[in-house]
Amino acid sequence: MRSNTERPAPLGVAEVDIPAPGGGRLRAERRGIGSPVVLLHGAGMDARLWDAVVPELARHHDVVRYDARGLGRSSLPDRPFDDVEDLGAVLDHFGLDRAALVGLSMGGETALDFALAHPGRVSALVLVGASVSGHVWPQDPHSSAYATARRQRDAAALAALELSVWASLGRTAVGGELIEAMVADNAERRVAGEPFFAHFPDRNAESRLCDIAAPTLVVHGEQDHPEIAAISDRLVADIPDARGAVVRDADHYLPLRSPERLLELLLSHLA
Image (cartoon, rainbow, N blue to C red; front, side, top):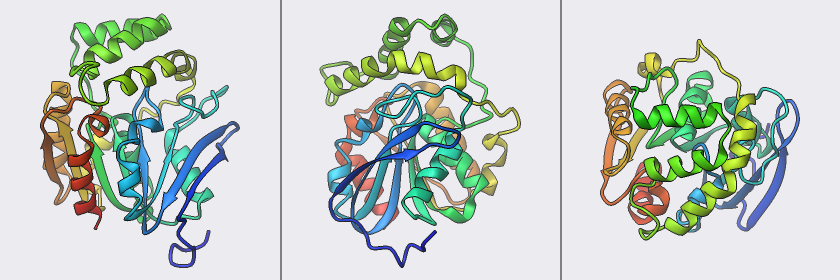
């Protein structure tokens, strides 16, 4: 790999298909100039999650975003895969030895696991409404219904639950139409791909948060799921020198609900 100082920073927009570890492809976009930042979306979403953030962020940074395996325009898996390995493949493809990682939900979990596995490759972390490997979610009617829909591979039920639980501000709030479109577009793909998501029982970032070395900002929406707030508090408490921020008028889809405030936080933390 070339070092970051040797590579020219891109100015335009480049969309590419990156070979995924073990087969398949990952659809990625790169634009902007400056220090590199990689954006990671959550489950049941795709890289459109960052549509309202990327244009301004790319005025200050070399921004990469991609669709996770089986979602958006990336290929469906036909064998077990690991999102941490996929992230490494994206960095390698673009010749990025080191980058800041901004991850929402599942993307935040991937960013944390990658930072623990490859600390030298992560310059900073921004965890937005993040999940964390090793965390045990409390059982409630919503989580039980979620588990049933996933077990029965019921894409329609899963999409409806996604919107009712995670997009609580509804369709009429900022970003609502795009959120509904993303969820609908990815429901069948999510059901098809999830059986191939590799599980690592020993991967437990929650018990190793004190080992995170990258400067970390933890952000969540005031209207997000209560357990996300609890996880965010744990991340701020256990990651050395982590800072926390709560964004008003935002649910789990914070980058589309409150992009201006998120941009303010990102630019300050990544400066």
